[in-house]
Image (cartoon, rainbow, N blue to C red):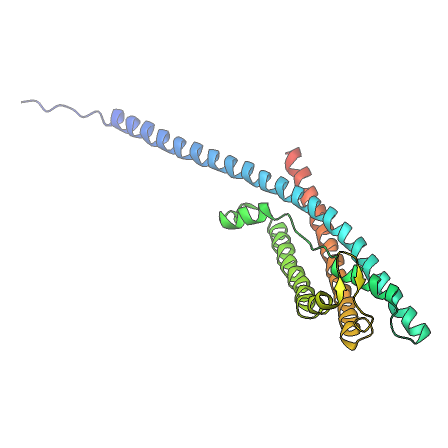
Length: 226
């Protein structure tokens, strides 16, 4: 019986076709994944930019308001030093107004929380930009900690004094011994010092914020022009 001749060329061509097809599919799939990651990266960067702009507005307002509080409290301190007398009721009321009504920084960190919780931080291909983003949000934790010092101070010293001696609705003292006491003076001085610390942190946060905003803006322009 005559042996059938195997057409090796045919099978080699078939094998090459299958190999090329599989390889092409693999390359195409990787290309699609890369494109999807690039689009997701661009989405994150745009979201970060929007969050940073929102934080900038909040921080700018906080710097202004906190500076005003510090200035008002310093004016009280200077007046009492000049006349060398205890606080009068009007100045004491001003102190209460400044120390009891405060605002805290609430960062817009939805994008950062999302990218951290999803494990997608490495999608930010620019290493320096990624480091600046991480550093910014790490610094915001420091801001929160400094704010907490003031909250703790007022909780431990401010509220106990005012609850017993100050009518919040009428905005008047029950007796003048409250604002003439050492406890009230210490609350005032410590509160002013802590406000100054808050102000320093807000200014630093705003400076870092503006630097990060500029970097994000550059990356957005570059990626948009590609």
